[in-house]
Image (cartoon, rainbow, N blue to C red; front, side):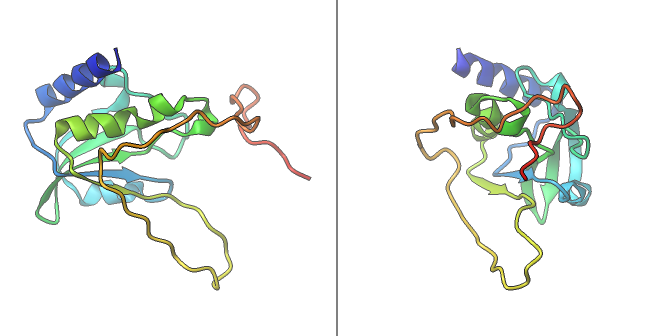
Length: 156
């Protein structure tokens, strides 16, 4: 069933864009502006793509931007979904699986984490798209829906 969903999403994207991406990019919070540097050949709302999860974070545009960046054919997720939004790990990784099915052999993932301490060092982690790993559903009580407008727990 998952395979069929990936194929359906892949075929939909191919109907909107004829490109063959080699690089997938996930733009995290605060980095969505990089999408404007892409010479876009297609920009597709997540809501149009079959089985794609929809971000509920207001600052995430929720678009797949496809085109050229630095002489490479790329597809970039302008916004992503998070575990704390209530999505399963299978749903969170679905767009990455679609990127792989479309031809991406490299994946760049960005996010906004860290602190204000200038003594903190940057950490770079790299992995090949499509590598096999066991992803278990984390067991946590930190996931909240946004029914009251606040999806985060307060810690005192």
